[in-house]
Image (cartoon, rainbow, N blue to C red; front, side, top):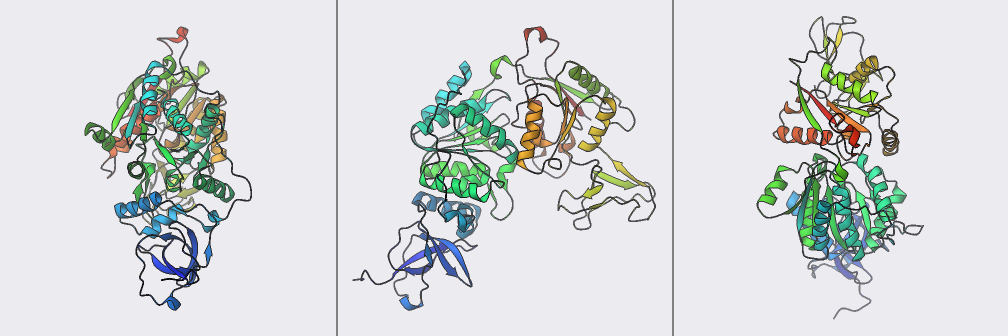
Length: 542
């Protein structure tokens, strides 16, 4: 019989790139899931007391002792099982998956301030009156809360009010005392979304993404682990927070490729969300106006359910679609905007409304050639094309992030003033717009002009308040945003995404064009505008 005073041996899984637990000893038996610090090799690392049989033949004097036991809510057995399942599914070491649960040992330190984000008011007076179609969809999602696992596709056209529908499911989840996770594909979408959440529920949800400060991360992590935090809005990493009682996962824009992580642990957060719902037996909602092919196949195969919102909310019309063949609608030499699109821009600005010109190319020009020898500027590290950024006077590789000053002479033949930009980027389109519309207020919105979430939110607020006439942007403008005065969208080189070696190029191009078109006309127009002022979408393609 083992004495109480005799050290206890237990398995600990360190947060490293290994796939097995190691034996350590402590003065007393620690529960499975306890966070500890152990010596592993020559360094101290965080680990978790893991289950499984302990080798009883180990000499007690040769087993290392646990250095520290953290005063944090232990990792649940459900979460331990989830870590093991994700590791098996992604063929990754369990320690690497656990590293996503505990990205920093400092998270385990008790926060010095009281936990925030307590959802004490579920209906904060911001609930909107749902349409008949929204009401039916919301009832369907609410009925699934507290039941067994289900996965439901919320398929609604752009501007249909999908957010208000799954907010009803979130409210039902919190009424039941459980936690809800709303996943977003990009940080750019979280700021405005959190404001909408606060307006609806009367309290701000917790945010979790790469730009959250360490102190905020500590507060959110402990709030989630203790069950105080009832709602989290986050990027794909938020899926691996140690929720005390998770009752609902919503994956917004489920089709978005940003949900796929391609470094360190390679996984698709949408699929891992469905797996977590199935293991913990709670509902999962996938929301999109352009569902992925695999999700549609799962619906067709009866693995997933589906609710549809075929109409826009509040009487707003779907945009008119116009395809412009640039071989027939000749543009002026050196320009990239067709005459038809120019006319639409001019008319829209004259009415005091907004225009979005979409081109998924950062910088000034995607290619620079020498008129003398024909050489192209290419990256010295990976041989991809160097992209000129005229505003900063530099060239960048958008594949490996190499950058340098734009040369005056050709690197191959040393001829001066022979380098010519080929093709348009958003900077070049902005230059053309400013020439044609000198009095218009123009804003370029791309990852080059926005370096942090706060400044992006400020720019988005300016657009929403009508402080910009013409927005020129990349794919960060294509999804999730609601600009009340935006009634015209022009897509430059709409078929550009069809080129290259991507096997899903057709699917992704359709999704992107559908999403960017959906930014137009999301507010219902007055009766005096019907027929003449419906939102116009001009696709410049070949």
